[in-house]
Amino acid sequence: MSSKTLEQEFPIHWLVWHNSYDELDQLLKTNGEQDKEGLDPRGRTPLHLAVTLGHFESTRVLLRHGANANTENAGYWTALQEAVSTGDPELVQLVLSYQDRQRQSKRNVSIPELLEKLKESPDFYVEMKWEFTSWVPVVSRMCPSDTYRVWKSGSAVRIDTTLLGFDNMKWQRGKRSYIFQGSGNSATVMEVDHDRGEVYAETMELTVSPSDIGLPSEEAVAARLMSPIVTTYIDTDKISFERNKSGIWGWRSDKSETVNGYECKVFGASNVELITKTRTEHLTEQDKKRCKKVNRTPLESFLGVAEEHSKREAGASNGDLMSVMYNPSNITPEEYFNVHIDLGDRDIGRPMDQTTKTQKFKANLWLCESYPLTLQDQVIPIIDLMAANNAHFRKLRDFITLQLPAGFPVKIEIPLFHILNARITFGNIFASEEPIPGVECVRENDEMTCSVDESSFFPPPSYANIGEAHQSRLRDEDDELLQFAIQQSLLEAGTENDQVTFWEALNRSKPTSNNLHSHEDQLLQRAIAESLQSGVISPGSEENPETGPSTTTTQPLPRDTSLDDDLRLALEMSQRELEDTEKRRREEEEELNRIIQLSLTDK
Image (cartoon, rainbow, N blue to C red; front, side):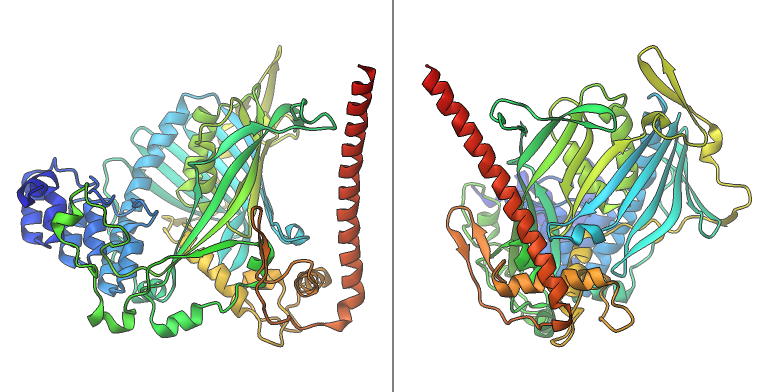
């Protein structure tokens, strides 16, 4: 294929490749119909290509003409993450500022649209209980829970919460209401702080462009350049749903359970893979030493997180930018844009230093075909409202928008991170189980509805009106930074002589005589450490169902003899529970075998 043909087929990409930014600007000005989000044969948009090649001028032109800074490429990397990989602070600052601006613009457009969509659906009240759990024994007791209370009337929505999220590695608690009121092409969003008696309000209109957010601070840019690039996502390609079985005749009986008074079919989602990819090619050697883990953390070993390293070697660090090569394989444009040419492991951009971790889960769903809410018209718009500023709701949205079996997911379990799972349960529908001020449950014949008083969508008159809600208050949890912060806190929270509890690790605090949270926390950490030392679970070991367990030698953890008695008791109780479970399983199998033998004898 000739260069002229490739240039005609990929006009924007071709100009980006050669960094012909003046011609690119003229093309986008005179022909606005050009597809700025089209993919080249390697799966990159023009913006991704410009950023990966480190072409600052072409990147700026594309962003000025509205190229989407929030799209992901085939590897689930955003343009901002690719900019960070170059180690260029000016490029990172540029892309980050437009990403923030575009997110604000999308929020301004999407919220009025969602409220208008909700206007036509029946009014309702429902509670969503979020329970955070972990796969480490006993840790679930320490994980928080919260109940989101949702009121909807016409185009007005109110969502109450007490768990505000992560901030500086601490679970933030408080009483907040988020009130959304739609009116035509505009919407008012209020954040009501009940602890302080303050109201922050913001008005959004579809026709109004977002205010200029300004350039990100040097500190915000430096924080990204000094941290690994992390992306976490659920691989939805292989997920399949099948009905769970129950009882001794499990191979015949479909499992059903009653959840908050509604009969539900229980389904399991198999092949749910939570994938975390981490890149460090942009880090200086000093940063790499700070971030590098000689061995995996005890918690990661305990969870048996599979880990793979990419085949590519790391390129120059950002401490030696002059030696950065954005096309180290010397790929020609004719090779790059020709779909028939297999580049193999060769690629543009700085040579990638990537680690991939994969954790498999079996998610569960409790589906009811007679639940009085509709997922598509009533619940998903609510989740979309919260997903704009909450990473947990984004993961819930990604999961429930899959092709689920028939029914409403009254209860659902999904993975959030490698250390946290979430169980979401819908309840108190129409305030039928527990009365709620401003909500009247209406029962007619076999149907149930409710009426919601308008007063539910107005803050108390005694509260102080502070003004417009600032974007930083409606926090957008950044998965990549949160993941890295958790990993780093697990590494840095303790020293060789310190015993760190899991909760202290999440809080990124050093253990002292004043901040040891509780005897149970200490016992939990000692139980984990003891199990890692005693061989109950070997540090660094992973068990592959096909190849069996493998073991990596690690340094022993320090002992605290003051807790030995309680520790032994905890381990004994855990062992007895495992033995009882195994005993019941064997008894069921033996009973089943006897029944089968009797049936054969009768014949």
